[in-house]
Image (tube, rainbow, N blue to C red; front, top):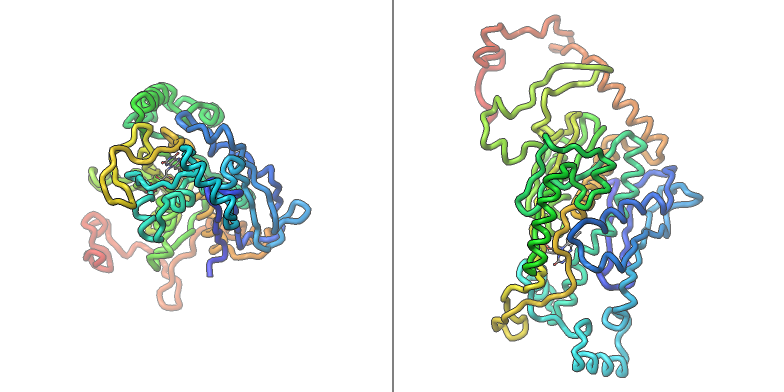
Length: 437
Ligand SMILES: Cc1cc2nc3c(=O)[nH]c(=O)nc-3n(C[C@H](O)[C@H](O)[C@H](O)COP(=O)(O)O)c2cc1C
């Protein structure tokens, strides 16, 4: 069983979101204030809709923490939906009484959009597949959970993972790399991290950001939406998280699944990503320079994005998520009605974002933080922070030490130079020159 895991609950307009996190070691200092910043960062960004003006997300720590320190027991966090007060009857948990049901019918007859069942399924959203899968006639039952409001619970959980990882020298950040086909120019990424955080799209390149904003404005004035790309960077990850020995232990696979699980992400890349397929190997692979200061292994570049063979290689982990345009359009696409099966001119519309790349980046950070926390605990073990810290310090110390000479049988080999310079040139080593399979 995984040492560290989490599970969220809650509907978009229900009373509250919740998340249980299991496997956080005892003795980690944690308060609700530690979780506030990322929740606020998830709500910001040019192109977001009116919902964010209603919510001021704050996670309440309900269990697993005493006197500001984790107990090692499951942590339960709640994030209240302030908007619930506008949806109390529509999202009521208890069955409706006859009077309440009659009042609801009256509201529908009077054109109350919230109370009216949703049947004109939106292209690109969970509506059709979700309703048919679970046998719902009202798409409200689908969209309430499929909504990315759920990612607020993930971000709250990731605040705990961030506290945990920061104790071990691991830090995770993200920025907006592209919106609507406008990409940042790394040569023009002049903003500091603080300046980037304060900017409307959390983009380090001010010129590109201005053009990205113009694309969002263009989408808004056309009743349309627009996507983009975020980039998440994890610093301080030691060599050796993940493994190549089984498919499901590869850290690249775990991170890709985690980032791909974000409602709206349609592609994931590491480092140079798909660009690698267009270059020769000599222009892709990161030359290993040898050891530098304090025994640290140095690569000349980081095209692999910090992961080789599913194992962290000591370079920053660089993951990008491709964000599709939001599927709820102010000028809705044609669609069909779930009940009649007949075409309709316009799909359902309800208050929606126009572009969410910076917010999706914060959710991307969250999924990377949660995945790294699990990978770290798998490597270090430990029920208390003291045990984890000691184990991580031992790992970093071993990685900094010289690697012992290899042994042949029970004897230390005297020289490693079994290959002549000529062998190296041709690729013919002592083990032959065949491929791997
Ligand atoms: C931060 C964030 C905010 C989102 N806001 C909206 C929104 O306002 N309207 C909408 O239709 N989709 C929104 N989405 C995307 C949908 O939740 C998502 O497209 C939908 O659940 C279907 O999942 P899929 O895109 O992975 O196929 C948002 C996603 C994120 C990450």
